[in-house]
Length: 165
Image 1: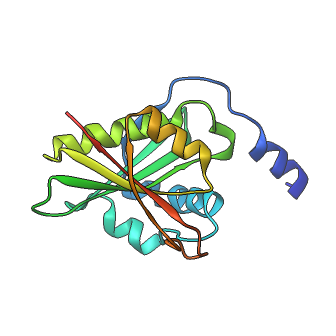
Image 2: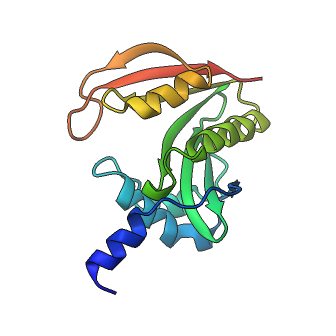
């Protein structure tokens, strides 16, 4: 397939349909790494880190699927002895953005970390990512600080936190 045809297929919006969020499995690894590489230019999770986190007691790795397509992922870390989980990453494929996939992933993270006994979720978000900021604020996250030059490329971050039930 030529690059132009591949690009037009990749860039096309997916038809709206039910998004299913589930725990990631080892056989999702290739698709998770591909989504990571397409979603982020820096601060990427490596194949080895995904492999280590899938199924571990210290992380929650979720995937969002529409039909047979992986359209999103989320990673949260669970530190032993802490009531707070850290939402580390949310990635949504370009074709599925603006279709509620990010919201479904964040909701599923909150449910999952709550089931692991966590009462709060915290995260960092790039200050130049207004769509992610809107998502977190809509879901009830409150800003509690900033971190200058937090990301590999020197971008600043806002810190957010939410108490979950």
